[in-house]
Image 1 (cartoon, one colour):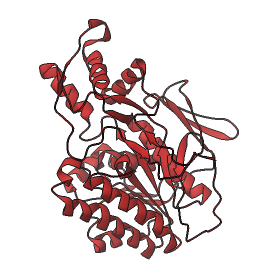
Image 2: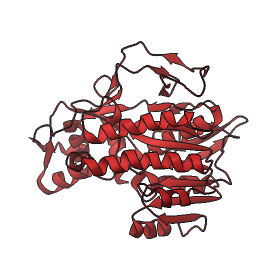
Image 3: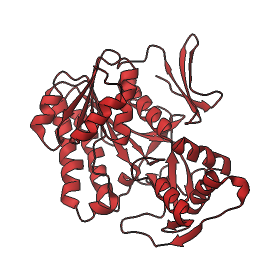
Length: 371
């Protein structure tokens, strides 16, 4: 299957021609297309771990919209499960199963009869993971092992995992556990017929704990933005783009039948002061010439100056609108073909050397969060 990303031409539209289905998102500033036949989720049973979370709940809606027979939200947050039901209009196809991925038996039961799994559940608090390292490991590593084993035991067709830029050349507990999760998923392809791949991406603007909300609050109250380092750079993209990227990558795994890939989006970046100024312009208007005070608080433990998506030790292929990393050792298919153009050995892809947001693009990013 081929996937392309085009500049936005109109908003919130779905239209067709003879060979392509176009989805146009006003928030994503992109168009992602999939072939009209490419909807393997129609009339299928899909389980979403962490289904009540920011990304997980969005995918519960996405799969329902794509005609799934049943969508199972697997989450330990029973109160959020009730909110999810209401949010999605009490759709009878949505089943909320309360459980923890570290409890193998409950996960094994929940995955019976499931066709596909999207694994979004994770311990994501970078700071607290440093002093809750056992809990972080329990959820991100042991929980992921349980997802793998339950999927294989119940003959699930495919499992797609959500990783993070922190897994690339990790320097903190969270990143190390997600790097292990990536390795576990890739190597799980040699254990049976179930396909496993992952998507590695960075900050979703406006997600739970996003610095954008923290900046907006402090700027509104005191016209101050607490910044760790003014030269620090970060990748960002909108929730809509994140959903479409993960969805199309999941779809690509199924349609191409290539397993064990790490999918990486092409993203733009910005600095914290630029982001704070864009939020100020949104709140007060760009014509007001108002700027927040930048309060430098210092780099936190386990924090990088620049985020990495592809490390110099990794070998990635450019397949057009995204990169993919093929497994270095492919036990299940020694002759798996490789698409796209291989990047030069030693190439790094970081928030420092990628394209930066311009002022207008940052404004669109902030609008997508608050509108």
